[in-house]
Structures are given as C-alpha cells and as structure tokens.
Amino acid sequence: MTMKDAKSDVEVRPPLRIALISPPLNASGGIGRLMSYVLAHLDSQQVAVRHIDSRGRSSRPILTFFPMLRACLTLIALKASHRVDLVHINIAHRGSTVRKGAIAWLCYLIKIPTVLHLHSFEYGEFFRSLPPLFQRVIRKMFQRADHIIVLGRIWENFLNEELGVPKRNVSILYNAAPGPPELVSRHSGLDTEVRLLFVGQLGARKGVPELLQALSRIPRLPFAWSITMAGDGDIGGAQQLALELGILDRVTFTGWLDSVQIRGLLESSDVLILPSHAEGFPMAIVEAFAYGVAVISSPVGAIAEIVLNNENGLLVSVGDVNALEQAIEALCLDGQFRERLGLAGRRAWEGHLNIAIYANRLVEIWFDVVGRERVSSY
Image 1 (tube, rainbow, N blue to C red):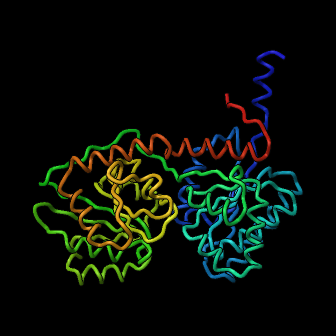
Image 2 (cartoon, one colour; image 1 turned 180 degrees about the vertical axis):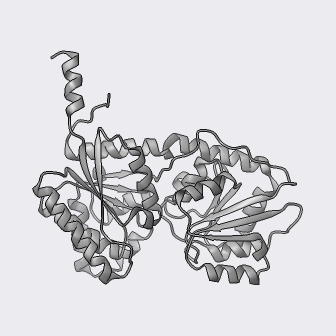
Image 3 (cartoon, helix red, strand yellow; image 1 turned 90 degrees about the vertical axis):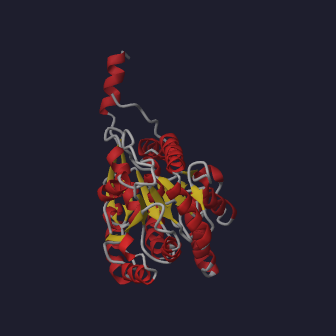
C-alpha cells in the first residue's frame, strides 16, 4: 500500500460515535460548563458526539422521568440502527444516580460500552446512607461500567475500596477550562482597589456566611476592596447578612452568569475566594488559574490535590472565619504575593488543567474503551 492509499484510508474512517448523557449543558452547573468546553475542542474527524438530555430543566422527580425515558428510547434506537459506539454518562448523587443508573443498566443489557463520569462532591456519604439492597445495585453498576472517570484521588480510592472497582478501570481527570493566550496586567499598589470574586451557588455549602463575616472584619484602610458574588441560590439571605454586617455597599450580587460573563469577571478580578464546606473540583478554581487570579479556598474534595498552600493558592480550614480573614487581608496588602500565586496557578493550568489537554485525554479513554486505534487527523 502506498502512502497515498494509507492517507486515504485514514480520511474515510468514520469518527467514533459518542452519546453524551447529562442534563441540559447550560443548566447543569460546573459539569455542564466543562462539557460545553470539551465539545468545542473535539476533533470532528475523530469523534462525533450527540448530547442526550436525561433530566430536562426541572428538578422535580416526576418531571425528570420523561426525559430519562426519552433518553433510554433514543439509546435503544441508536443501538438498533448501529449509530452509537459508546455512551458517556455524567453521574452525581441522589436523583442523578436513579436516572443515570437506569440508563447505565440499559446500556449494559443492550451491550453498549459505557464510561461513567462521577462528579458528585458527596457520593461516598450518599452511598453509605442507602439500604444494603440499593448499595449492591450501585456497586454492580460501577463494577460493570467499562471505565469510570473521577475528579480526584479521594473518589478513586472510594471506588476501589468501597465499591470494588479495580484502579485500572478508573481515570482521574481534574476539571479543565480554556484560558486566554496571555494574561492581562493587574495593578498591585495599595492605592488601587482590590477586586475580589466569588463564583458559585450562594449558600452555606459554599461558605458564603463565613466569607461575608470575614470580609466584615477587614478594615477599609489602608486599602480599598470590593467583591462580586456571581451565582444563584440564596441571594436574598446573603444580601441581608451583608447589610447586617455593614458591608453591603462593597458587595455586588450578579445572579447566575454564563461562561462568557464569568470570563469577563475573571479578567478584571484580583482574587477568587471559595471557602466551601464540600466540593468536587470546582470549575471556578480552574478558570481562576487560567486567568492568573490568586485563589483562596478550603481544602475539600480534590482541591488540595491541585491548590498547594502558599505555592499557587491559599488554603483555609472549613468554617475558620479568622483564617479566612487573615488570608484575604494578606492578599489585599501584598500585590506581589497575589501576582506570584496567580502566575503559579497559571502554570498549573498550562501543565494539566488546559481544556485542550483534557479533551485529548478524554478521547484517548473513549478509543481505549471501544478497542479502536486512534489515528491522527490530516
């Protein structure tokens, strides 16, 4: 065979056909944002992804049944017409496990290879709270998946030790995001207002009460500060607390923002603060790293596997208002320290949190699962 013939064979080879199972991508939080980024970076000559909504836009259980049923019927039709090679299922706890579990078992019965993508921040607690029968069903579901993707070592260990999934069937893929080709310059003097940012659902799980309490203790001089709280949730409760603490004039509540608006905020912010009580691996931190924004966070979920204290961010214990206050004040006072942390975060993003790297690794997993050799595009 000549080189020309070999090249022709590569060009006509059909792409791998993936069915992506998840709620609507613009209504499913961080995992939806991640999947949107991935889809924008895939090579259409290698993979063809079809998104299938498994929940709809309602969170009421009775209303989520019909999208799940429609997703199951769609997969049966795709299988019958030989138009699917692999199903990628994003799965979390509670109702997500019910819906995606039904879909995963269907895929097993009709013999479609599956990749489960576990992105729950409290799956271990959820699993241990279930009756033994349900635990057995979930354990078998994970064991029978062809491969499982998790956000960090904590869930890799959970799958191996509690669900009996061999580590060879598990891959750790830390969330990733796109970023600007170059960083914008940021002012670092005390004569410039320090622009703080919070991104997430406003409420106790994200540490919003502690954040507002910590901010209320920071003096207004020798520096000025303001914070943008970007997210939905209990906005009214957060506004009331900010008012009671006397800092409402320095806090801006935006409500829910899309990824383009979040990127705009990151370009103009100096510090991201996320003192959560529970997390997987937040997209907000990945995006802050991409934009060279200094990060203050709590070491929950997989965060401490990436955010290294005093190296590329600051870590504070959950619920420790004093430590949070000190961390914020330290970064407000020292612009060079902020810049050093931001640049270190950017290097971490360039090394293994860039969406192009993530998408390439994900495609490798898909090809490995179906046993097909991946070829380069011409």
